[in-house]
Image (cartoon, rainbow, N blue to C red; front, side, top):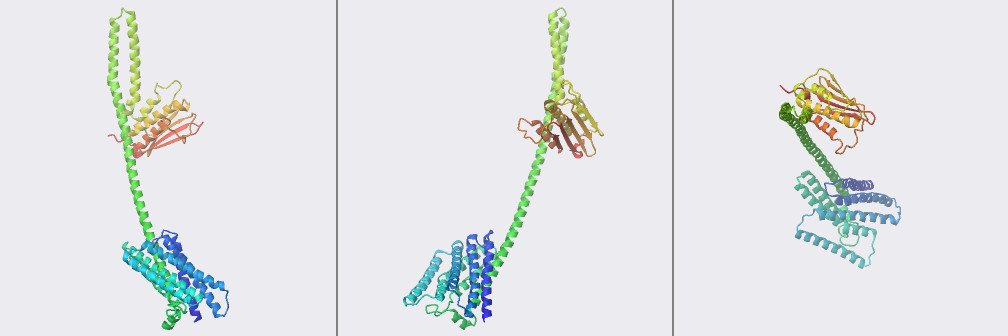
Length: 494
């Protein structure tokens, strides 16, 4: 019999202690059974009450061995019992307050019955002491169970029952049923707390552990132990169900995030395509406008200057006997010639005819042999591979980059002999401009108006989906390299 009672207390304590550990772990996460403010008191109740029941094993063995243990051990046991049930009461109050959906009148009825119960118990305690009886440890144990344990378990039942209804509304049927079962177990557990040690006070004189054992043939602690195990199993299953829900929510959240990222990526890709198309359109529009202005200068202004020169020559013949007039006409002819040369250079700078008629290589030859460079500046061009015509927009991009690179060499590099390489390969075309000037750090912050030339190069290269590489360092010159794949540089003109 002793061994059976030890086993009962062991599993009794194990059930609540394990439940306390599970609830403690759950309360420090994002709880779905309740909130952390509710679960933490339940966890503390389980841990302390489990220790209390294991302490009962120790005290029972001391009693069976007729060993007189110190009085403070009994006091500690009572404190553990009272504190554990206080935390269960806190859990019950919190559960009732946060989860209760009772209407006004049921609440009034419940609290009225609870008040009557407290008045009845307290009145009996006062009558008991008025008769000259002294408080004993069994009586103090009974009072703790009457005044704290039974109301706490009842409130816990109501709170968990309301939590179950809320879970059912969320269509979490399995979890709702488990929480309902746990709530019923707490109600039954509260009823078992009314069976205390027998002493001469109502209701302990009628409803007590001895009466229960004689009536059913086993101690009330067995019912409590079974309830503790069922509560522990219910809470463990509830937490596992919540963990499954969390995993599903996490997987769904990851899927949603992935879909959102794919949508964003798709939108970014679409916008990048639109940006590149806009750049291509801008480059084309810019070059078309340059070509139009060049044609107008060539066709209209040049013709007017030619007519002006012919009229000056005619006027010179008619004024052969006037030296002062002849000198003025000759000066006007010289100015007209300079204007014609300036317009010719301007036309070729705007849109060299070689680029449209003969291709990129011829346009680069013209660029390197221009008479507009200052004395001593002599760029060199080398064409490698089998020369071929490229797509018109690609030829324009490469020509403008070479033009901008030579302008930068003139302004900044302090170098007079830059090298230009145009390399035709099977799968790509490369343009490389090298100088042996002072160089610079490409990682420097080129805030406007600095760096517009490099920014323009990058934008032009992006418009044809090419790659721009800038290699430079202070004192070691600069290499600008443009690489365009073959599918982008094939001639699309028929």
